[in-house]
Structure formats: structure tokens, C-alpha cells
Length: 83
Image 1 (cartoon, one colour):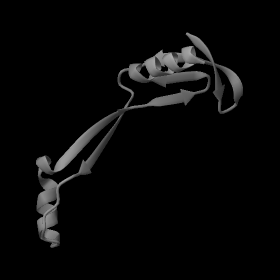
Image 2 (tube, rainbow, N blue to C red):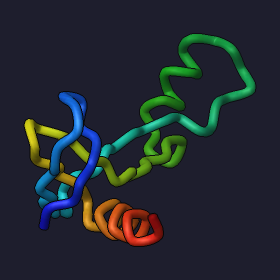
Image 3 (cartoon, helix red, strand yellow):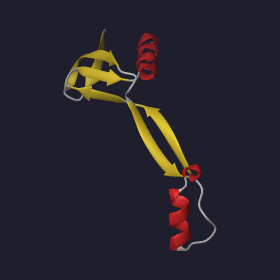
Image 4 (spheres, one colour):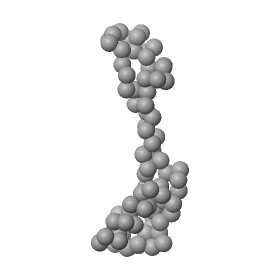
């Protein structure tokens, strides 16, 4: 499916490819001990319950191909239709 879309190399058309594995995985520590001691912080950092993992849909442009998560492709198609 081709959509007219501005590419980094100028105006052209992008070919969309859907890939459900296009996700960005981020881990962040969300709980910290009251103590500021290094030893306690290291212990808390080892416990899985103190961390949160987030999965963010992403997209990549390779030449004239846009490889994106299906959620992003649906959003892009809705946006193009509204224009």
C-alpha cells in the first residue's frame, strides 16, 4: 500500500509494512528504598517487583519503506484519510 508521504530524502511515496514485533522495550526502576546506602540500592535493583517494563509501538524508515507496528499503521491511515 503506497501513501504520498514526506521522506527524509524529499517528497515521495512510502511502502508500508506491518510488523507486530516493532516495539521498543524500556525498563525503569519505579520503587526505591528510603535508605540512600549503596548496598540497599543494589539489593532493591535486583528485585523484579521494583521495575516496570513498557512496550511502545515504533516505526522505522528504511529507504522508501516504512516498517511499523500495526497500531501505528492504523493511526497513520486514519490521519491520511482525514487530510
